[in-house]
Amino acid sequence: MRDLDLQTLRLFAAVCEQRSIARVAEQESIVGSAISKRLAQLEDTVGTPLLLRKRRGVVPTPAGETLLEHARTMLASVGQIERDMAAYATGTRGHVRMLVTASVMAESLADDVAAFLQDPAHRDIQISLEERVSPDVVQGIRDGSASIGICWDAADLSGLETSPYRSDHLAVVAHQSHPVAQLHSVRFADVLEHEFVSMPALSAVQVLLARAAAVEGKMLAHRVLVSNFDAALRVVRANLAISVVPREVALPFAQLAPVRIVPLSDAWARRRFAICYRSAQWLPPAAQLLVGHLAGLGGNT
Image 1: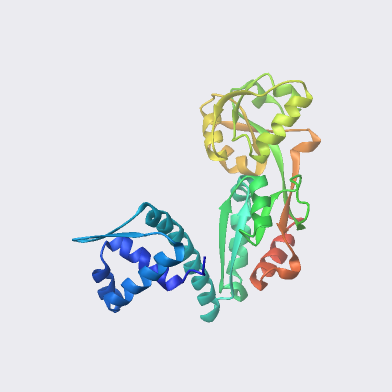
Image 2: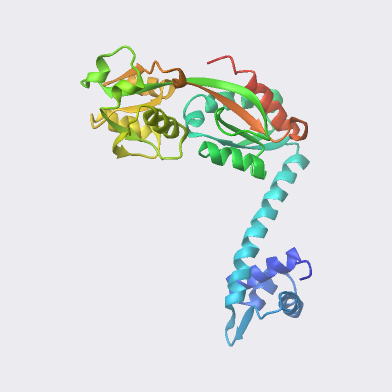
């Protein structure tokens, strides 16, 4: 198959959406015959009819619907490239995409990124944050979906370069009337008899807890499953179960709700996070600046 022409794909998508060659010709200031010729060449390129001509316009064939879906994806990617390049042309120094875990997002990252962007030297940098579980963060960096990832440093980071970021400490959060809330600290093994609010199975915290429970020859008793820390803390506030979350996430909530934070004394409860990227040498300048800023906060936990 010969290379597909982006302008032809744009016209094809527009014709499919408008159901009219004439209407698209008017909007694009192109004669209808020129569009028809491009579409005929496109059908010749893919080797199958893409449009059905009817009295009141055109409709895509099944093959046309499939090509339309691919065309929209390609055109969206091209649009993103154009926007990114336009940012450089207008003086914006870069757009940094980051993949981060829920713990990182819920703790200090937003404040750290805000501090970076408030520096006048960085006013022309844009940053996008997307939340994923640790394995997906790592895979996304390997695949080139983003420049920078931040996740728990126990993830498989082989093949990537890393810099240290912050750390946190897992703790049990319980309603103030719960027996666990009366303790100053506790081993995880000593709370396994209680029911838990749990996070998605692939989340870093949940993987860690399941592994620790297995070492004790036990399983977590799941009473409620939620998708994020905020929901978990709300369930704890309702006194339905206890939960294990980063102490740094729970502290603001505990100041306003009848819950207590009981640190876990287990060595694994102290977690460190890593900034990961494929190669520092090939990071765009804006991403290099951001990595330097975040890595400099590695000791401020």
